[in-house]
Image (cartoon, rainbow, N blue to C red; front, side):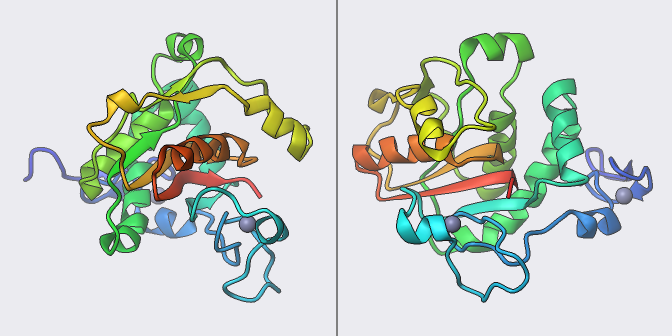
Length: 231
Ligand SMILES: [Zn+2]
Ligand SMILES: [Zn+2]
């Protein structure tokens, strides 16, 4: 028997799960996937939407990133699993979901490998309280499986943002204005292609604010990878 792998029990149903991934095959296939979505920001467009379509927002005002790649929609069981990772420190969940996301990203990034992964930074106060940054946990899994280095100090969060829910698009932009700063000295040179890593992408305002800074710094291509996209 292998020392590190071997049978584990599935995080969702408790069935024994072979290999290192602690999520059994049936549960993996039941994770909510986004069927028809905006090719740019991954917003669900409904079953009637044609393939290769942009959402209204991306048509009018395209985001400063190329593509958002979520593992799935923010519904059962992803929502519950992410909450267990975030609020109860269940790192086994972060590992399993991070691996699944890496599997999804591997064929996408094989042609154009990114130079670095940029986990969305937590505010220092929140980091002290929680003890870990869930985006960094996910980025570590991606890094391990994709071979892309993490740039943990490239982006700094200067203050915490207020909750984004219930705010208008303009107010959300305002809410994240000036809360991030890039530290170019943390990098040897300006990366060409960066992937921002977040746990849940809700309003896009946060990842857009970081992508905007990266583009201004001269990064050519920015993508976003996340566990779940709220539609
Ligand atoms: Zn299962
Ligand atoms: Zn869109």
